[in-house]
Amino acid sequence: MAALSCKFHPPYKSSVHKAPYICCTMQPPQTNIKICEMEEALEIPILSDLTMVLGSISQSKDTAVVVDFTDPSTVYDNVKQTTAFGMKSVVYVPRLKMETVSALSAFCEKASMGCLVAPTLSIGSILLQQAAISASFHYNNVEIVESRAHPGDFPSPDAIQIANNITNLGQIYNRDDISSDMPARGQVVGEDGVRVHSMVLPGLPSSTTLYFSRPGEVYTLKHDITNVQSLMPGLILAIRKVVRLKNLVYGLEKLL
Image 1 (cartoon, rainbow, N blue to C red):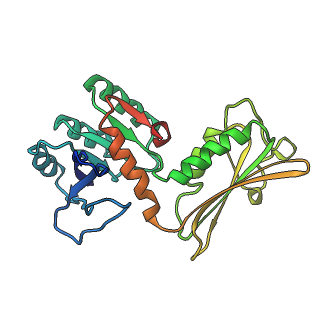
Image 2: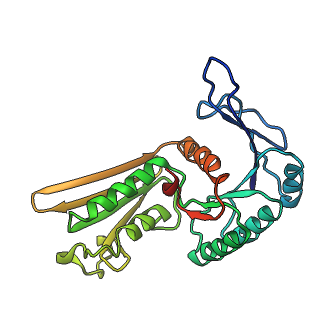
Image 3: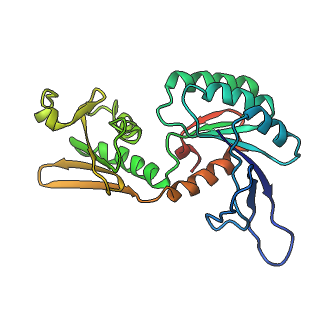
């Protein structure tokens, strides 16, 4: 569980424009890391006792946001505890079930407390998904090819999210090759024929490529993640935005 005690500093009144910034504290102390052009180091508290962390943070008058990177089985209880201390939550936990999201939504609505559940924190991944939705109205064939450096659960959450986003839009894909009996042709995700192919090879970047096609034309969308640092701008954006929410929002793209 990573809990962020984030203090929001408005710009000082002066003739020189100074952007607001976020300052977070870390327990136990670790090396300060400056990221995303922030004016002060971002320090992340990582402790095993959530109640102790929340109690300590709640004593401050500054705005606080708790960021949950834990496990789908603990998210609901974590958000409930966070809300009890008057704090808002950003949840980045892959493979979180929609039943949990629905339960959290009802809880946050009743408590009038903001929460952002983000299937991805990558801005590039979100832009890829938005472009895929636009392309799906113009092409009858689509396949997703993803690569990862290490084995895991496949298709990945990103590939499933993309397949779900372009499903139920009134389009049936790959009509001439709709059979799913051949494993080499990839796994069909959803009910509209979207195929996903997953590669695992050491040294490969975390990559997602979409191929849309029709006779005489192929439209390709590709997104690579080469460093986890790419998630930091999305995380900072999520923290900045969630403090204004009074209910649950699913998907960082809704706040872009």
